[in-house]
Image 1 (cartoon, helix red, strand yellow):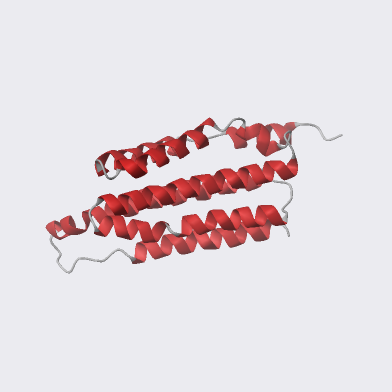
Image 2 (cartoon, rainbow, N blue to C red; image 1 turned 90 degrees about the horizontal axis):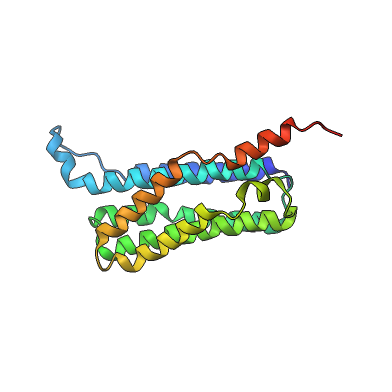
Length: 198
């Protein structure tokens, strides 16, 4: 299978996830700004989830720009990632509609955790197929950012039952951390394109 078909399918799934999330937003019946207050938790959760989906989509794109070929293991690792990300609309709605209650907040953290693990599995599956000296392996390195994010998500789950605001702070902090442009793969790709072909 070509890389293009996998990316097209994945892009479609990402688009559906965002569409489902936005359709969950209920428009207030009143034209007064105060009518937004009851749905503010839903709006804030939607914004946070949209940012997370956007982060995964952009990084997914970069990963496959550094991938030469696709095999069955990579296909299934990609499906595994999409499965966990596809649960984002569910936990987004649950957490927002219940005003960041402990159980929905913990569930949100769990989906973030499993999505991050699935992304790490996808990266490692690609590297296992294409070698330690592949473009992706060079770009990822030890992947401190990805592995540290997993630890933060894991901590956020039990923390939600102690103080959900601390879990929310972790979600926002990690999202902001990933919003800082991560140019590792871009730099490696640029360098590889500059090398003269033998």
